Length: 120
Image (cartoon, rainbow, N blue to C red):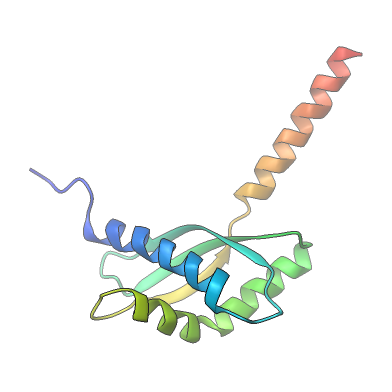
């Protein structure tokens, strides 16, 4: 019987929880906004973790700036997460902006406008 839930998926799930904790409670960088960790994808060999985040209450420039800062702070964040996880080797972190939230908000806005035009 094949494994339904492989090691990389388990590590991804745990890493997402630990990252959320570290970013919200242990990172005291005033340049960072309110960050939500949407998804963590860890490679099969656990060498690289792609971390998809959203930043609330900021413009496009602020979002890009937060990604840049997070990638600069990646070694520090990685160290904090490594202390919380029981792994022999921790993945290299690479942060990316997840625009699915923004896309969803835009679609909801368009549907709301469409609904209002049909009610008139």
